[in-house]
Image (cartoon, rainbow, N blue to C red; front, side, top):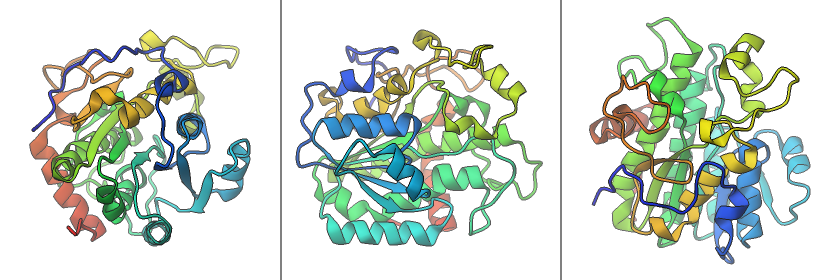
Amino acid sequence: MATPQAPIGSGFGAASTAAEVIQGIDLTGKIVIVTGGYSGIGLETVRAFYSAGAKVIVPARDIEKAEKGLSDMPGVVIDSMDLLNPESIDVFAARFLTRFDQLHILVNNAGIMATPLEHDQRGFESQFAANHLGHFQLTVRLWPALVRAEGARVVALSSYAHRRAGIDFHDPNFEHREYNPWVAYGQAKTANALFAVALDSIGQRHGVRAFSVHPGGIATDLQRYLTKTEIDTLDIIDKSGKPIIDPENNRKTPQQGAATSVWCATSPKLEGMGGVYCADCEIAAALPSDESTEMHGVRPRAFDSVAAGRLWQLSEQLTGVRIVQE
């Protein structure tokens, strides 16, 4: 049964932190993977799960940076993986499955934003590849462990940037249309939300539920490709170079930014629910149209079940991977 795209009264809000959300949650014996879990909101997401007793695995493209970022959390497992390298995704997943029988929480947190036109090793546009296709492949490869966990949750990091663009099913990799880094980012973030819709539809009969998340506007390494003008337009850093913190208006600390991911992954209030886009530690309200100018809420393009199914099929075709039912 589909979960309504409507708030449920979580008890948390825009200013809540990951530490507050995880309070009272015991993850002892649970296995968790967080991609990009060694910097920014990913690091704070790992910290919350770690504090609750989970065994956390962090796949990383930059092992040295990961070791430095996670040095204060002994026991967190760091393993090599590059979302733009499909072979490395398969190798990581295979290694995981030889070590662990179950996967209770998967947070597809890693991503890139507004990059120049680049491609993954298959030739696919890098934002669509890293943010969506790489995570699609990873999730499918880890499917057996998710099913065996009996109640697993998958969290996909989307963004309010889904309002910038839907999926161009005829040319997702900008082979025939002019490349615009922000359109590409918007497409990728819409894809993240639709991925959660489709995965939840497939997974719920196996006890696997999926959610997508808008974490908020946070000053992190995600902005490394932006010009000063673009950063100024985002209005997340003040003139002195310090991050602007105003959670009610979408400007958050990394700890606040991680909170919705942690809430989706662990909240008892979401038991039996899934396939919804969440923000500010709450299921976001559905907006009336894709043309809505409202900052809060989610546009129809990001929870359209037909588009979600179509994207799932396209992703299978592009990656050559698909779920094999046990």
